[in-house]
Image 1 (spheres, rainbow, N blue to C red):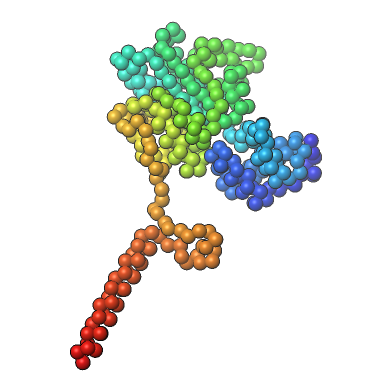
Image 2 (cartoon, one colour):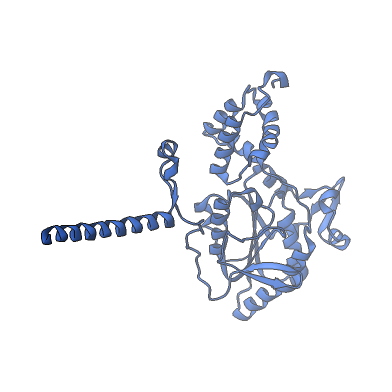
Length: 349
């Protein structure tokens, strides 16, 4: 391990851009320039452990490590895992008391006692285990339903912690006491989730920016992706939301963070208003697949960057270019008419 003085301590803007763009390309997480100091701090200790003297050396280590071990370590460093059980109670009440009973009743009528829920960006497991507890409260311990809660994250470290299912008192800070008593057992200084709750949850590694892996998810009744997409660029958000939409059964619902919105990201979902919150709904009768291209800003015709450096004035909007072309064509026609008239006058004189 290197001492602090042996490492080039400042992350240059050039190296920050290289590392930032690499992270965005591989997993969709985007660091704005005002997050440079945050990224620098998160990488510094790892560089010291590896004995690397510069951020550029660390970038090469990650990029050319064919085992992907260091890439996975980088994902552990750059992801934020602040969460707790029963986080944002109004949303969970909306799920428990309003939309879950609706879906359960619909499935009972159809004779399909199967429920599939996707917790995307599950972190250390508090969210999927909370969902499992809610389902057990609604259906009872021996409910006879086939319940599958698919929980995934890009960080292997948090998935290991999730499978272990042992938590500090801090993680239970918003959990009702009766829930703690019913679904946890005390193990020294930790609270362990009971086996019946764990049995309904399957954890796996997933990069949400991986289109191919995302496309494998199907027949989902509920998607929970709360406070995850805030770290992605709009381009990646559109891609991810399209994947969620395609995975949902008609009539399914998607929960995102209470401060998040799909405005400017997707028009495929209908925003439903309930007593305890807002939920995005894939309506029955809606298209099974959202294959529409992602919404784009007003079209602009731009010349290549190299040409733009030489002639920046040529960057014009498409509508302005069309107007200019039309005007030029009109003027050319007028000139031809004027030439014909002039020729006619000469012949008559």
